[in-house]
Length: 126
Image (cartoon, rainbow, N blue to C red; front, side):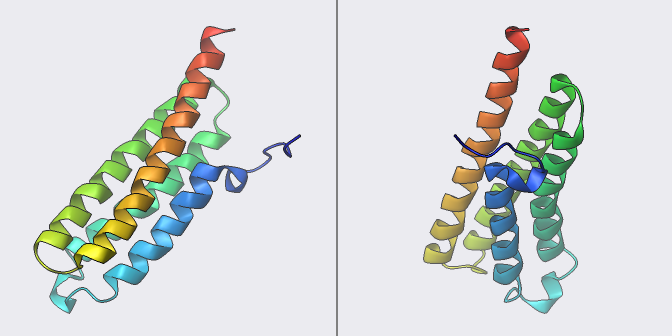
């Protein structure tokens, strides 16, 4: 039997999102310095928003509230995916870097969607 989830840090979605955030920070270190207050900043804020909303959603008492924050996390994730496409297309990251990080975003998306789905099912059964 799996250990009971006691903290947002126990959630796989948060763990994978945290890894994604670290990797985005590392990736954006090499962006041109004139991008520091535009694409670099946008990407970093959006990727941090993913795990921040997972954490906040975890602390909410009602499933509907949790779903709301997990859905916001998904929106931030989609924002990151869009910004990574831009970074690739303007040559800030190469195809291999893009592929690796894009795969991470897909994993995080599936995990967040799983949280939302399980909460919706639980809500229907109560």
